[in-house]
Length: 201
Image 1 (cartoon, rainbow, N blue to C red):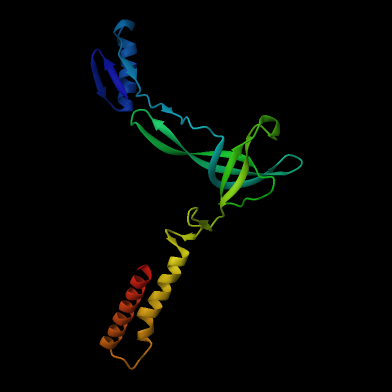
Image 2 (image 1 turned 180 degrees about the horizontal axis):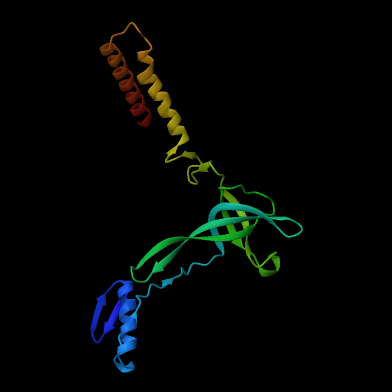
């Protein structure tokens, strides 16, 4: 919020602005009144169309007497803040027809805009094109491997197997001393490294 009086621009709190505004209108003629202006925070919407969107299913419902299944899909779109010159992601909800009942809650889906005659209501403007990821079963689109958090599932299994072979197996032999167990672990680790190097060459 800014107060413009002559050439000065002062950043002041909202309650002070209300007080100054009341005093200006009471004691000054129209030509000499202070002009109170609020800082404009208009945001330009993204120019990217809504023909094809990807989002997450947040609600399932049925519409009409025929009980046509629909899904509410939350899509993230970017909006430009003209003052910060930066895009910010903002969620938008779209209703989409799900005629084949492909989706469940939490699924990531691709939705496509449909023509006006195909729309059952004015609110439903899209249809579910396909399910990209089932909820809880994320597949990397490049390698086609299942992902758990930020690792591939087969890499996690390999790590578990290596830890069992190198670390845990020597500790199952009770007769060995600690140093002997550590020596066996080092030997197995070195053998594993040599095997990997030989495979790569």
